[in-house]
Each structure stands twice: as structure tokens, then as C-alpha cells.
Image (tube, rainbow, N blue to C red; front, side, top):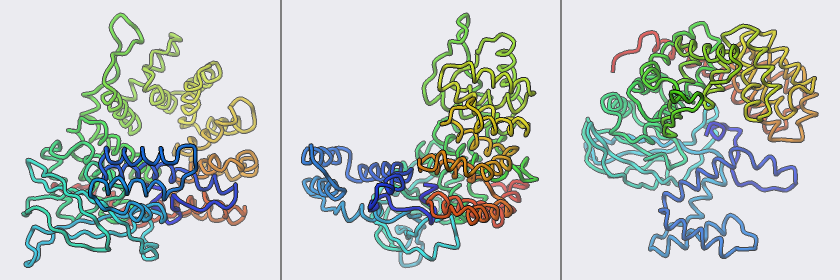
Length: 527
């Protein structure tokens, strides 16, 4: 949804006139958005009816060709067979033939005429760039699910079809303690915003008893608030207040949602003077749950055999370790260093496999050059492709600019690093705040070589361009990007307008929102 929230996005269904168009059409937007829209449609129809329509479609076109409208037709027939006359083609064309997605804003309508049984719902094109929003007037046919809740319970969800810019709908009775929740379990491909009073009630609910709201909805609220705030639809304080409940959160999905959002903010802020305000706030949210979950433990007497936990528990533990180590938890750092030291002294790798990437990276960033050389040696001696990838990425975590520069040069000018891994080396050096300027300069200096090697593989080329530029966020870096595009004559490719828009958005966020963001962190008000 990040890429599809840019004005440089594109519809998932496009005309292909030349063979070279194929790589342009089939990118992450086409694949991921396509899957999300099918999920939304299946939820609207119901799984059994969706399966029926899909089976009819596959049987009808077996051993033949089919187009998009053939699928919509079969699904519409399935709906009519159950007495539900919904034009699937008309609905889905809005989602597949125009780019982007809407933000749905829900608010209680408490006027004298409508009392509190009614809500006002509006839609507009969600875009991260505030200055371009007036250029778009797209409308979608939105299957909006809404539920009404209070301190102890959430009511049954209601499905509302939104077709116009603004609509009023009647739902259950509401009072000033009642909150609204939209897009139940995140089945719709859109974001949901509320009036500030409703956000306040939702935040209070999460802090008082978060389990009243389901796991999927908690994850969705976190994701929506951070992205709405990043795009300027919400004050910066709202997502920070919302995640204040996380010390009580025991489920993986909300933590994963928060982790992704905090990682994006981290890369925006990691070179600012007041960065410690942000990292301290994150550690405050993480500390209690991290210490409770701890690290993976071995079965006594059976070295290296980890106690098996459920997948969700294991993933939550990993997420918390990653957050704790990344944002500077001292105990996490000590544990990572101890694992690396034990590996070096015993030549036995006792590090649990699912957290090796975190431990390797943390160790390389904190320890001396000898550790970097040790990881480099292990990279060359390992025969496991997955292990080599983790070791190589760990080498990019060093705070030593000399080592980072050495790695960049070795990756491109020797056969010591596999050709398919060179892109990842440059991208990961750029994600390191100590290496961001280094990778950006290296990318520009070596562009002719990189473009000659990867230019025909549009997917790899796009990955490289996006990966190197996505966390540039200063006025100087923005101007350097513009100058490079102009001087290199590379402005025609789809990756460049996207990269430029993302960096412009990063710079805009700093200009418009960074002060407010840090101001709240200095003195967060009570709920």
C-alpha cells in the first residue's frame, strides 16, 4: 500500500503493446494489490460462493484463454444464483482500472435531526503527497464493514456500500462513550480514518482493555494511524499515543505492524540530533514484553536443540529481540555479543537459526574489526545459500566506514560476492545510517556499470534504485537525486519518478511534521 499511495502508481490492469511492457506491468503493485483485491472480493461474496464462481470460471475456460471480464462474469453469476444481484465487474473495474485506493473517513453524525444512530462516511484518494491530492477525483465502490463498540463489547459488523464522495448511513444507537471501528479484520483494500474524538475513544479502549478489539483490527489500527499521520491526515501524536498500549500486547500481528511502522520512522530520524528521544520511546514500549519473552532457550543436555514454541510465539519473540537490539537495549546487545564471542572462541555456532541475522548484525555493529573479518571468512566458507545471505547482510551493519567502503568495492569489482547479491549489499549499506551517504555516492559513481549489468532486468534495476534512495531525506539529497536524474538521462524509467516522489515525501515530512513529532515525545500528555 506504500507504493500504491504514490501519485506515480499505476492500475493493476494495463494494456501491453510491446514485450518490454511486461516487466513494467508485473511489479509488486500488480501482485500484492491483486491478491488483496481478491481477498476483499472473497470476503464480500462469502468463501463458499466465491469458490463456486471460481470453479465455474476454471471449468468454463479449461485449456483455453480467458480475460479479466470472464472472471467477473462467473462471479456475478454465482452471486445471482443466491439472489444477490451485485455487478462484480462494475465494482472491480473501479479497483483494477484506476490506480491507488481510498481513505474512508467515518464520523458520528450527532446533529439534532439525525441524533446518534447515523454516521457520515466520506471517501477520497489516499495519497502521501498533500500537494497533489486536488488533482485526483477517483471514486471507488467500497464494501465497508463497520462495528460499534464500547468498554466491554463490540457489536456485530454491518456491511455498507459506499459509492459517492460523502454518504450518511444509519447503524446502531451510539452515545458519547461509543466508538466506531471500520474495515473489520482488514479485509478491505483501503485505509480508515475517524474524527479525533473517535480516535481518542479507540486509544482509551486499547489502553484499558485491548482484547475487546480483535488482533487483526489492532494491527490494522496501528498500520492505518502511522500511515495516515505520515501522509498528514492525522496529527503525529495519534500513532504514538496508540502504541502506548503495546507493553500489554501479547500477539504477534500488532507488534509486527508496529515494528514495520517504527522501522520506517527510524530511517527518517536516525540522522537527526534528537534521535534518542525516539529510540528511548520505542525501548520504553518494548522493554517489558522483551524481558518477559526473553531469548530462545536450549533443551538442557541437548546443545543447539531449541525448545519448540508455537510459530506465532516464536515470531513475536524474534520481533521483540529485533526491536530491542535495533533501538539499543543494553541487555539485548550483551546477549548478541556473548553469542558472537562464544562462536569465535569455540568455533561452534550456537546461535538460534531464526535470530542469527539479528545477532550477526548487532555483533558486527558493536564489536571490532576482527569480528567483521570473522564474519567475512564465514561468508566465504559457508556452503548454505541462506546462511551466506545472512552473513553478507551482517557485514553491512558495521559502523566503520572504511569497512563499508571496502565491502562495496569488493562486491562490484571482484568475484568474491555473487553477482546477484551485489544489489543487496549496496541497498543494505544504504540502510545503515553510517553508510547511507556512502552507498548513495557509490551508486551514482558506478551507475554506468550497474545499469549495464542490471538495466535489462527491470525488476532488479527497480529494486536497486528504490532500495538506495528510499531513505534519503534531506534537501541536499533530494537535489542530488534531481541532478542525477537530469544529468544521467534516466528519467524515463518508472522507478525514477517513484524514487523522486518518495524522497520528496521524506523531505516534506521533516519540514512539516518532525517538530510536532519530537515535541510530543519531549512531553507526551496523559490520555
